[in-house]
Amino acid sequence: METESDAWYTDKGSEADVVLSTKVRIARNLANFPFPVKMKGRDAERVQSLVFDAFNHLENGEKFQAIQADKLDLLSSHILEERGIITPAEVSSATKDTGIILRTDGRVSCTVNVVDHVRISSFVAGMEFDKAVKLAKDVDSGLQKSVQFAASYDFGYLTSSLTDAGSGEKISLKVHLPSISALGRIGSLIMEMNERGIGFAAAYGSGSTGFISGIGKGSSLGAYYEIRSLDSQSGTEFDQMTSIASAAKKLVEYERSARSECASSMPSDIRNFLFRALALARSSIFVPLREAVEIISAVKWALDMNLLTGIDDSVLFALLYRIQEAHLEYVLKNGSFNFEKDVSGTVKKNGRLRALILQEAFENIKLMV
Image 1: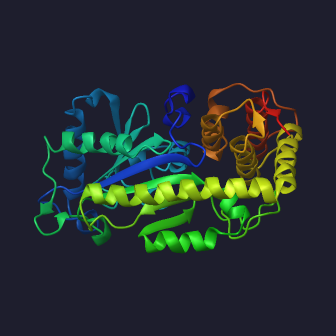
Image 2 (image 1 turned 30 degrees about the horizontal axis):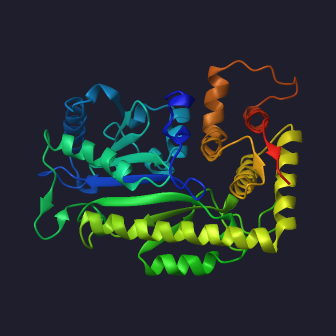
């Protein structure tokens, strides 16, 4: 795993007050092989071998590491889940012919023989469509020098799901919408996005009314959401990117407008949320994951309202990864910590380390209210 300072999520991205990250996923299948669900005999083994070899022949092939998914230990699998590289279902169904390929900086990954033969993903901080697309397309183009992907004139690239056919490209963004959530407008926003052909989901699980803030209706935990393109068949790749880019820009406008409205209509609620969140972070011995997500959300909301200084959006985004269970277990496994004598077991140690990480990250925060 790359060091924390090298991780892509520590970068400073554009529109970072609202858009945390951009992800591009490209689905491809090798010509002359059935889709993974239909493969027989040694088909899967041959596909994995061909794809691994194609990565070795990339111009920067030395930057990629390939591994059979069934050889991943449980901790590594969970870290990849938390990074959005694989899903729990994909981990549980992994075989020796399921492959995972990672670029050393974590910005590009690829799964082999999961839903499709090849699924390339790229990750970029902030709203950076061109950069994320280029990262994924460079790998796609490089692989096509070694292998032939299945395609037809009528359907474009052939994939196991019809909604992935055509360009085979899906784009998603992780966004923070506390102001829209606080005003109870998430429901209407979801309807508008769906009409645009954009999917809308909670990023870290449902949250309903914030349990620290006491505000927000129909909100996800911490008011973090993921929006994603649903169809890769209609129009060109440029049309598809333009569609979600337009939706994302609207979201940014809506959240900033709602932020101004919240600042004038509910300043006491916002200060209460911030003060309670900081008090919890600074005073707690243990901080559970869900609570930590909402604490980070409160600090980010206040930062973006100019209510505090001493931290920036990229640090807060990185914290959302650093506080995850498997990431904490990795740090505990590879570090030396002198916790209190009664702090034992994974749950308590994770909660203790999570509290310490938040306290260290927030130590330079100065309130402007």
